[in-house]
Image (cartoon, rainbow, N blue to C red; front, side, top):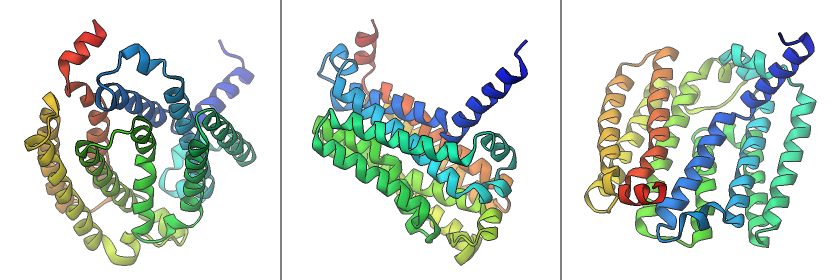
Amino acid sequence: MLSRKNKLLLFKLLSLFSVVRGYNILMITLAQYLASIFILSPNLPLREVIFDLNLFLIVTASALVIASGYIINNFYDAEKDLINKPTKTMLDRLVSQRFKLTTYFILNFVAVFAASYISFRAVLFFSAYIFGIWIYSHKLKRIPFLGNFVSALLAIAPFFVVFVYYRNFEAVIFVHALFLFLLILARELIKDLESIAGDMAQNYRTVPIIYGHRVSKLIIGLLIGLTLIPALLLIQIFDVGYMYLYFWMCIALLGLFIVLLIKANGKKHYVWLHNILKFIIVAGVFSILLIDVDLVLNRIL
């Protein structure tokens, strides 16, 4: 049996993991490595990619900055989250605000230090990334639609830095990025519909608060419609191997999403819609393996 002190320590560790969204960071790290292995450098030996020190430092710096971003976002949204996510917020509050801020600065320092081993340009990128997350959390997220747009851009930034590292700027990469960006942007607007009670209490100026549910749903529907364009391009024009099965699944799920969006009228419905988009994004990470099944088998076996 764990002592009371050890139980408290365990709960604090779980609290910190909840604050930094550890599961999201693990997923982004996995996505960066899978994209590097199967999309950006398919001709390089597996060992060379996995044990590439610069890539490891890029992924590590990305993870640290994203973790610090979740911390500063949690810091600014503490009161709002108490209304929208009371259970999670009570867990998060096991770690003091002072400790969170200290951790925030330490993570950012270590991230920039890691980037300094890559190049000065890497330091500039991650410094700008840190500043972008801070200004978003402090100011921009309160501005209708601009906050959502910036949030989506910040979400795909870790993949952009890997693309630049491998100097792979093929059209198929940008179409993939556009597909992901539109999905994330739609998800950000869905999150605003979920958290409208807390946003109103804290005087946030989000799209649902300023323009109402109807306009928000129309914008989300438009974004989902636009998402179908890169999905169809990736199926019909570009060689994505068996990943075309994933995009057909996405089209079917997004069709269901639109039907549910039309009928949605409460937080419970918006949570379901959010989970559909989250599933599509997470499934997309693992579907990267379908681009070249033979390559997967050769590299595993």
